[in-house]
Image 1: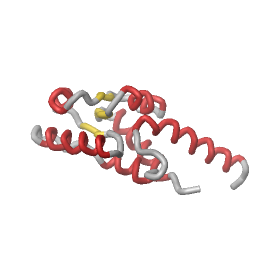
Image 2 (image 1 turned 180 degrees about the horizontal axis):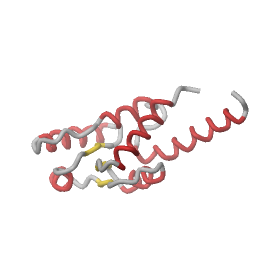
Image 3 (image 1 turned 180 degrees about the vertical axis):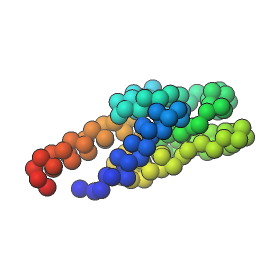
Image 4 (image 1 turned 135 degrees about the horizontal axis):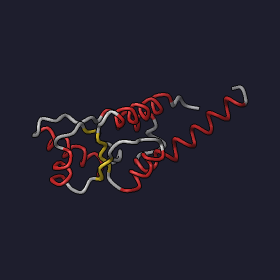
Amino acid sequence: MEDYKPFFDAVEELKERSKEGWVVVVEGKKDVKSLRAIGVSGEIVVFTGIASTVEILKDSDVIILTDFDSKGMEIERKLVEALRSYGKVPDVEIKRKIFISVRKEISKVEEIFAFYEKVSTQLSTRVQMGE
């Protein structure tokens, strides 16, 4: 089994930063549900367009957590550019850490919880079996 430590570390960092007041921006309601299920407790904003989303985020510390596909990367690029015009430098590294560590297995935020549960269960089973 691959080493999933970078994935779990990134998820823990996301949860911690969220608790500290960082706002997480995602693409849809399923993404919000997935993040809540893994324990992200802070504010999560669903992307509704560059201008309207930036208006909500312009005074916040922001983590951009869009999907790791062409659409998600384009949204990320535009949000970073727009937020920088307000002097904000959003975090995109957590997204990279999450998806690059499991690139072959998931590419969408809504898949994070199911993957987290699957791997946690597999690791728990291995520990119980003494591996």
